[in-house]
Amino acid sequence: MSLLMPHATDPIAVPRAAQIEEVLRKARASHLTPRILLDDQTMELPPEVRDAILDLLQRFAEGHGVIVGSLDSQLTTSQAANLLGISRTYMVRLIDAGRMPVEYRGTHRRVQLKDIVEYMENSRHERAGKLDAIAELSARTGQYDNDEF
Image (cartoon, rainbow, N blue to C red):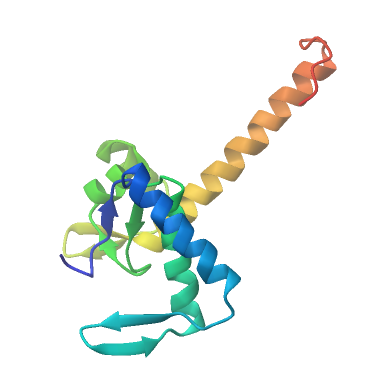
């Protein structure tokens, strides 16, 4: 496995997720600094690493798949499109329209993982704002039967 490219992992089985949840519960209840055991050496984890590992474990415990990668990883347009769940053609359109930063390696486009994550977050906020506006307009024009949102 290359650590320079993002690594995707599917959700884990429920029994294992429950075990992870139990370990997390004990870790949070304890005020001890988590350590990691590699071969025969124990190492104390810096707070940033501890928080990232606990977040990763929490996501597995909740039944989510995860992607682990460095924010500065360079992805091809196909890899970026797959991550966003869009076509490569649409990804290229986003780049050409200036909505997605890109670096060129010769004639090949490369997109940083951090830019993809930022685009996903911005899109989610934009979508939520539009849905709120539609709901407000519908409520104002009587399209809802006094349903509370």
